Length: 211
Image 1: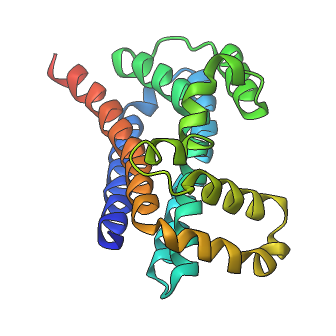
Image 2 (image 1 turned 135 degrees about the vertical axis):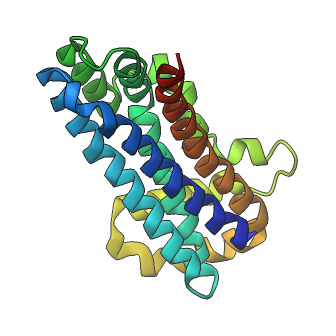
């Protein structure tokens, strides 16, 4: 399972580069607003890439602590991805068809700001909950082994204060060990969701080139 986990991250890395390459190929035709928005998106995409790279590095470490941290990093990367997914798709749809088209950066940036602040939780919450609170819910459909509790406690421990990690990690590692395979399998799905999206967006630019 750890092999699948690392392979998924490698695929995501390749897909991210290919998608950014496709956008860069037409970036010279961007309007000023589209260019500025793409720069903002690149910063956010890089944060996701860094998070996944950190996840890979943690999985490389021996022991359950590295594996636990790797899954937490993957969860957080998917959380960041969910925040920009809608804006990234809208942007790709527009510039893949006509890179020179004017771009309403104000409304798009407002949407991003709302998502990051959590103002759209009620409207867009289902998608976010799937990668945050519902991360363990799907696993528990087949086996109620408390994975939701494990992931929630792990994410909370890291976000509340990194200095508490050493105090909390023994219990987290013990809980994690009970459902490690299921947790990692779902992490792979979370990573693959990001990869599939990148590939879908890159394909839009291929469709334009072939039309």
